[in-house]
Length: 336
Image (cartoon, rainbow, N blue to C red; front, side):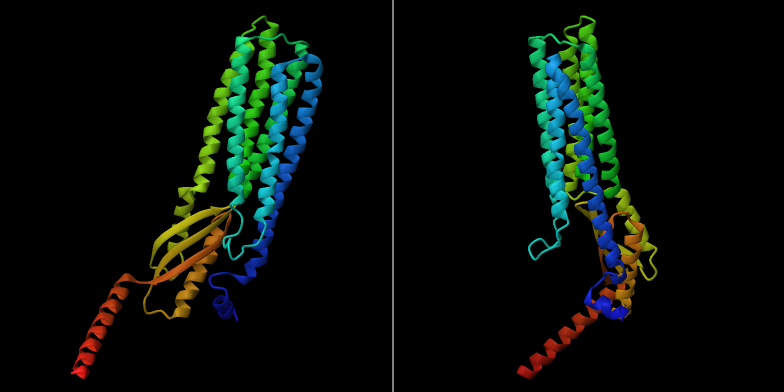
């Protein structure tokens, strides 16, 4: 029955199927939970800041408040991506819909870019035309609230994103961290204004814009690498080591890994003895697949192709060549 199951579903383990599905659903649940908690924390932070904006008249705080509202709303496309990613593979999308997370990651990078441009514009505008700010202590408190709220969200998003393998969620966490420093700039600018340094607010705003651009580079690189099917080279090394240690594997060929959403897939070639039966070669490949899935985190599917040993393969090719040549001569003699 075990061999028959492998014939009907090549290189997959039926006893692991339910656990794989449960794992995928659990990672999606963790991602959705992180998004909703982040949205609530950021929304609460923005509401508290908005109250202070009303009676302080701080343009810097207003910008930061609007920014936090916008950051909270970035959870919506990523949440939609997690929901879409749960859909089963179809005849058109044979690998499923996990790549929707990468599309959400692009949108988040665009939001970070817009944030950097807007922060730079506001800082430059305030540098040209400084404005008075009232109730500086409240403005400073709002800056601390904004920083604390964003840093809590950033740590939570990045931690969950790394745990479930979601590059988009990590990028969103980095975005929240930049917003936290933007909020902290409100605190520093309020302190500078209190000391009579009118230029402190716009200068610090420009420095924060540079910091946002640095984080933008990191987030864009992460999303770009995911779109280009890049993986950590250590994962490839681990896969190769696992295949070489599999009993019956003489050597290995190409080893390819790719992310689809927050799940890894592998396509590998192994070299086995040419005199093995098809069933024996398949058993070795199935064992290699099983070991890979247990050795590499987030790997949920692996296609392992067994090739005969090159020396035996060349001998068989030479034998086939001589046999074909003999048949050609035999057929030529019959035609005469």
